[in-house]
Length: 406
Image (cartoon, rainbow, N blue to C red; front, side, top):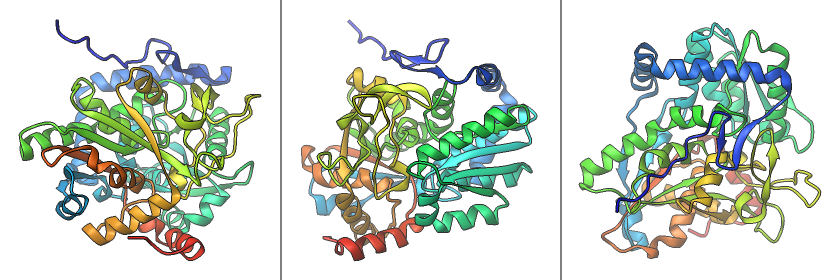
């Protein structure tokens, strides 16, 4: 009997099984419903699809390479390792795949102002880039702490013409930036589109972001079949909100022989409480528009998070990832700050690639677990961004905690 098809498509109300939904103020229900209608119409419109494909090819630089990491393969002594080089996208990360799609959708809707939240700054840079490309006003909300540790990306956004608004509430990181962006959207919804940067939030954002990011997995699937004549044994990707991971995973969903591993930020360790590993130490709750796994206390208050990586420093995870975990279609693990920084240096010294602190969480997990597979296996790691933005952060971290072990 053929295996039952794995179905993670949201229902009419945006629920991925028990997760997802539209937990927003009444004033945003109609705009979200309008956005869903426009998105569905755009997906069916050949001219919209051609526009997206054109800008991804001619402006972003797709397809990105699938690179055989020969030295890493040799040094780890296990499977053949491939890196999906999203770090080579224009602006330096996968984020622009989604921003091109959403800004074209905003243009289709007649919206001339876009807003965004950002943690590590890559989504902010990508949104500012696309706003400049399409002649739109752009405002980016960013936690003050993140602005300090990602000063290079703040300069890049402002150089592109965006207004970068520091958020000083709470922990002054990504969660607070999202809250401020949502407040702006409520106030200016008639003229403004909110370019949410990850596969999170109220419906239709999780499925919309996944749709625009799934170009990663579609390319990787074609490339590995061309280069090796078979599918990989496993996919590995870091998971903050989860856009780069779901973009890689989704086109392989029905390939049961392909393992999927998402890697969260273990920070200073789970016992320390200073981490962002939702599946390791969280519980199901509602945060910023959706029901999913959240770091919260017994009274439902959102806990503080920590990661050396600004892009993974978030208290919740995308709802489709929560469903994939329930279905046992994907596994989720975590690595510490120390392991991630060591992987940053190791990737640089073994392959001549500076990976983003987010992305090297996936590399760190593979370094620990490569011996699970044999020499005939293929492992595909999504290198979701480049690490230029992180060099000062890594340098400061190393000065405080000690240099690389690699």
